[in-house]
Structures are given as structure tokens and as C-alpha cells.
Length: 58
Image (cartoon, rainbow, N blue to C red):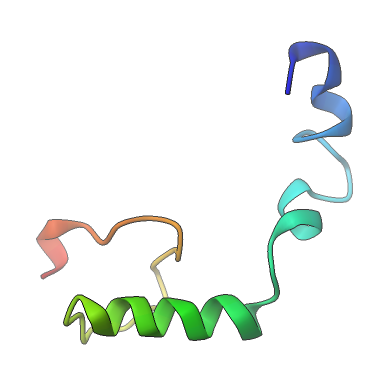
């Protein structure tokens, strides 16, 4: 990615992540399994799958 191609990559009107992110049916299952592997038992509604859980939430 470069400054020259931002308009056709990240800054797309149709949304960059809508075109590259797998559906929630896949990421939701992976997120729950990943959380369980860390012993995390809280709600996952505000958490992103590709981010580590904040230590303050444990």
C-alpha cells in the first residue's frame, strides 16, 4: 500500500474491511475459541478478534 493507491485500497467508498474480512460466522467462532483458550469468560461484544484483550478486563 502506498499514498498513491490509498483511494483504491483503504479509503474505498464501499468499505475496505467489508471486502477483506471473513464473515462473522467464521470470526465469531474463532473469537470465542481464542477467548476460551485464555480463560476469558466475559462478554465478547466489545472485543475485536484481531486485538489482544486489555489486561484491565481480566
